[in-house]
Length: 475
Ligand code: DUC
Ligand code: ZN
Ligand code: ZN
Picture 1 (cartoon, protein in one colour):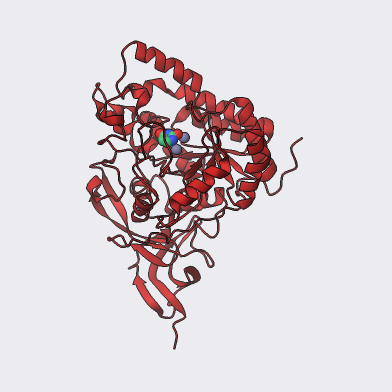
Picture 2 (cartoon, rainbow, N blue to C red):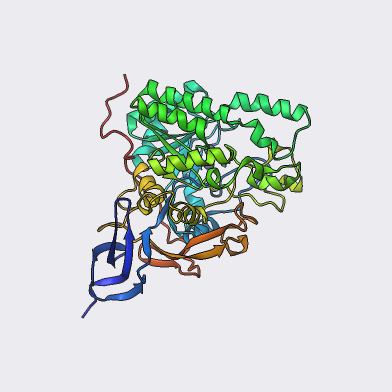
């Protein structure tokens, strides 16, 4: 007689964003078809041994194989990036398709689709990055791409080759409102950063640690407030990405108290790194932790933890932006130690995002297991229109699962699977790690990585759940 299930994950301590319970998980055709005790035998069986089983992670902010300027190249493409994701318990990733100024957005999407196809080991969607909101982009390309399932886009308020002015941001937000998309804002004040950078460089202060001084909390606070005001003017929800500390959080709480739909994301670097990791002296070693916004201090870390625990944050992402320390294309462009303003921004973290939060958040009692699931899987899947197919353990959902193993393990870059030659968390002790990752019912990690290039499918995103059910047309 044929088995009822292709696979049964037996004796699971199932954790969702709302509760935890003991169950077996029955899987057919890559989807969960039954949850219950003592399910009949499957064609294959995995014994979870009573361990915690969470939905596969949804990393809703990572940069893979992005086109960068000059000699700099990202170290991870969709092969190595999704390999690292899988080994760290992430089964859905949402990187970016970035428009180049002077080029069409649709062209960018096609280019990034081609970069990912036949390489990705886990499922993926794309956020758009809008750098050139021409009349054609605003009235044709964006609406058509949203209808096709690219329902979120990132707007930069800094970086010369990406930033939009306030009027342009209003234009893009209006399109988001009208067509049912969610805008993500990188909130830092470009002019303040430029002014501070000039002063630091003129004073000969060029080492990596001055990156943090060129982007103090104030520049993030001001831009966060401005982003909120622009969204209020257009009357559309926004999500502020990579929020780094207290002053930005205060702005978001203030907006929420007024009833504005302002959502927020934070990342591991704002919990586990401080500005001191960029260096206490002028050594170039600190270049490895140069990212924007920069890590702050311990007091700010605590405020971010509070926001994770009390529901301020909807999404916990890696902002994986992979650049190697060695070689010609990474943190030392053309092999040279450069001034802080020329160090490629970004740190790796796609594989360590979930184990770090599980270890330091759940196992140290700072957040509940349910909240961990909400932040790493359910929240991002909902925010970007992938729920309930992704981000939960429920009948009908994809069988994207992680079995967790508790125990001490020292984080070593040599054990990671990205193509970056360091981790900012080298030597940190983890207390939990994914023992096994399933993507649509296929084992892709069980202590060994089971490569399936091309297994990862491009997902069309639905309407982000953070948007109101229906919106009237813009006045
Ligand atoms: N900041 C970004 O905005 N993107 C990539 C990495 C970084 O540090
Ligand atoms: Zn950003
Ligand atoms: Zn980013």
